[in-house]
Length: 517
Image 1: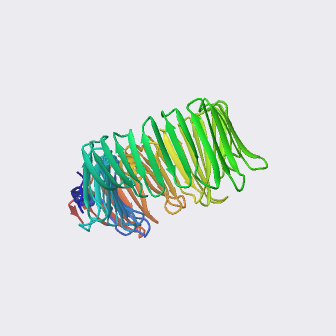
Image 2 (image 1 turned 120 degrees about the vertical axis):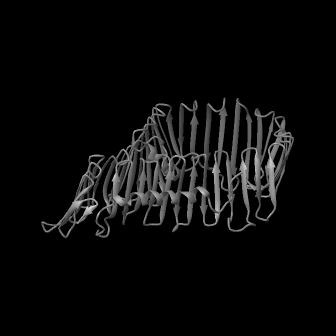
Image 3 (image 1 turned 180 degrees about the vertical axis):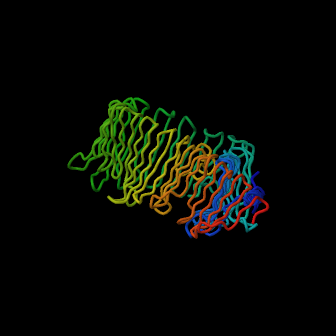
């Protein structure tokens, strides 16, 4: 069902296509190869049709706008794409390979020796592609299952007829026959469940769990030394009590008319109590000590008015006048709204900092992460028009359009985002700034000092500063071309035929192609 091959044939064909294109176009590269480190060593432009760059920053090929791309970065990352049909990302230093075919139809990730393949409703993984005896698994939900577990035992299933599945969905084992007629499951915790005519008859036994159920007539569940819960005529009658000797507790619920729950620590005297009428509309809850009430929560009626003070824990507060205005805060996080869902704000503590997110009418989104007064990063989106980000180190990005409102999904960035990115802007303290419109039709680049490095308006002109005192100008895709080198050498070409070369203002060569002297 899924490929369990070490090499993908599509991957093998891609470099061949790439090399053929580069070989065809190398005759149009720059006339000089004397470039300073850290600048372009090779560059050729044909607007959105063709772009080739070989520099210290990257090696990059782009054909027919965003449709075909190959990028090789200094950190070892390589990206190849034939959008939207196929893409591949490889990073040798981090030891992974990602590949997509019509994402999200089919994708796979190879990390070390572990291979994982995913589809819409299917998944396949191999723990070690180099070990023929390693565990592997593949399935297409909910019908087809096949695999080999960590002990080397084969298993499979064809739902709902028959199945014997191992180490799947957090279960050690799942067996079924003519589901829902009969099913048996064993959880990783050791609890064994039996189902007959699921969900009617259910029995479960484990190290600390016992369950019996004839649904919806009657049933109970208990966890050793913790609690006992039961129901009759589900969902109407529920009750329970504590099995913990150190905790006094009981609960009763007659859906939806009335219910209560009470829990108290017999030693400390701390506890909580809740009552509800016409659930979920009217609820009163409190927590207390022997001396006083330490927190309360009132819903009257839910969700229109909710008030909470230090409930269910210290630092937990809430006040809602839904849908007009409200807030809810817990230790380390806070949620607010105005005219829900038009204005939503969420803030929370993260490791070494604070994150604050604001959403307005779904269209506007802002994400601010602040680590301290000097270190921060922010992201903004006006969906579906554009998105931009910036950091305290001076780096920034801007993109238009931004059709898919998801961030940091590498598969989307590889396969779909370039197809609808009409304009992009990048700023880096190391490389400077770069503007690009319509996949290379217009390009403007500056170095970190703000000096112009590249200006392109296809098909009219292309100007590049390849190194200090070295420039390259091409008009009408090479109709006229001029190059100036640091040693005062100048190359000129007109009508792709007439060539002229000078040094220190003196002609050193000229002629018509191929009679060049």
